[in-house]
Length: 288
Image (cartoon, rainbow, N blue to C red; front, side):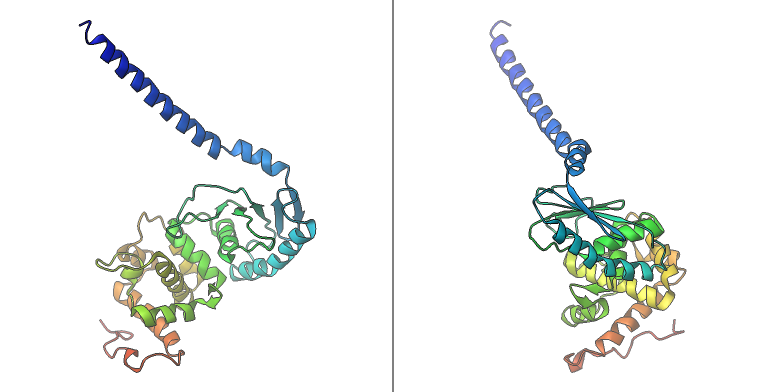
């Protein structure tokens, strides 16, 4: 009994050290993510305002003129996005906080790397890493969508819908960008776009492009109200069965419209190989 005492004391000390380390890590994470220090920091930032934007950054990081120019350049984007939503948020103000020390755990990964920006309510926070700030237009679209239509029922569908609202992908019109991707990958059915098809390995960025293109097809063939229904639908993981139920259609019709829409863009690419034209067995309207 006495011989075991030292070993028990050693084990007890080891456990205390372990739990203390865990406590320190949890406390550090709490302090790191706590909104209080961030609120205090942002309260002392310099700011400018325009018709629909409030831009903030730490004092000295950018000049007032640079911030104001950034806000002015953002105004046409706001107008275009709001017009596409039927001027639902014409009086809204988007708050953009540009911070060289911005760090935040992403709510949803757009890629394998953590993004340098986040969207929360009407606020966009982003890393300021140059004297000429550049932010994806889809961030503004996410804010306006949440104001006009509420929060998305599924994060992935929300991201695709935001990209659809911008109308472009990396500077190229979404339909043309998706058609160029299809030339490389071949046609992907809706189930593949949704990540439902077994054996399909599509890179995250390619899947996001095809998803945004698919939302664009729904908007063109069925109208913005159909997009809104899909955006609002509560789905843990979107599947063809759930999507068809929300849109009031069938899997065959879902794929038929998607394929028609995609091939209408492929037809406009002159460099398209001769042997990759529209397949002869493509389901047509009314076929079952």
